[in-house]
Length: 433
Image (tube, rainbow, N blue to C red):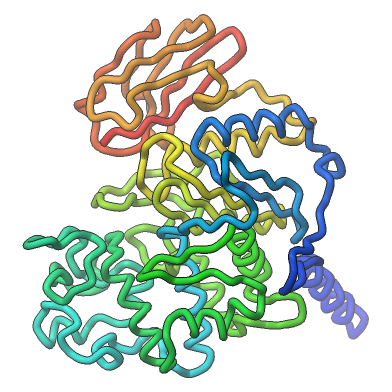
């Protein structure tokens, strides 16, 4: 019995050890170990195809880490390794991590009311309505404040009390509300007695060698800093021998569904592999996973204009992309996610699948994308038929030739154009606005 228990404990220990990243770059200097793509069985022509696609679709910088080491790194145009780029809403995930650190230090608790920290009147709601809003509501997008406020210059990103307007009780709806989230910066600065930049640097930045800067409510850094943050998240908040986010319960909750309305959202992190998802700006629930061709265990920091920090535990991998919008879609996730993952999935030489996705293949072009009505479908290959499906695979519209299709009757959301060609199925995501 004792021997069996010993073997079980030994097995659990070995699994825990394997779960840890084996390499971390030094916190100072530019040194960063690399792994040759050939060691992973990645084909050079497919790497070249990936780089070509990135260059053609607005990318400034791109990095893939495997077990902490750089496998791919490329910068485009005048952008260099030392160039600074905005994270946009990918910075929300950084704020989430800092919130966990503040809680483990006893500076706040997720159940604290925001009014107790910032004082009454931080919204335009009445006192009783406002006092029901907690820290947890801000980091789960369930505050009940109106994500589409009216009056004056109010918008989704506004933080003034006049623009933080009561709509519903907390925990009764999920809505992507950047203005409400941004109050977390004020919360963390208040409870720490520091500027938000100083709190970020002293609690996290210096420890992992990340030297970005908050300007207003936006975080800016070099691409490698984003990769460092992704590596910290991949390793459960531990950097080498330094446990930065010690609150393991918070870490697990951070990358798990935080509420039932949008299972694909944790504590300011997007989650792949869930049963349904909601998109910013819409009160619609879409069946299926956020990025179907990406690993189901992936969680991601996603920002406007295709800023991406993908964290993939099952592959011990971090992927960072920064730049301009690839297809003119400003939302946190876009058709670019799916096409990019097609390229990443095809990097191993052993991948010989015949299902192709995306405009990069020049096999299937859908325009305009996004659309409010008609789309034009063009293919470089002979198409015998194509159809429009929803994200759970139900066929909605069909046609026996390439041409135009009217999507104006469809609800806003993401749909799949599937064409049958001599080379197999060709698929492309289209966004109906």
